[in-house]
Image 1 (cartoon, rainbow, N blue to C red):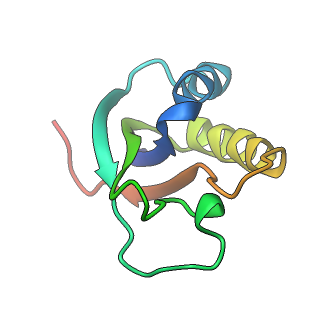
Image 2 (cartoon, rainbow, N blue to C red; image 1 turned 135 degrees about the vertical axis):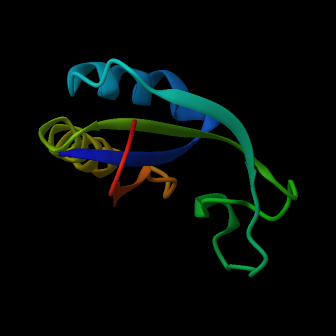
Length: 102
């Protein structure tokens, strides 16, 4: 069954997520530059996903229409990757089921 995988990362992890996709056998995907914003302040601004000092964080959005087993593999790889992070800028991923496609 085809599903839509959507992943967001800070620019620093750009090459890493491409390698994770490759390791999960996700060969077809698209990406786009995005600016992430966070309106709420925090005590630990450097550990936030979107630090407010800059106004916006340079980030990347990836998406792929792919099969569930490849998505499962990607999720496992992303979970392991996020465990190794020193700062709190984890890779974020969601899956959306596809009702119809051509």
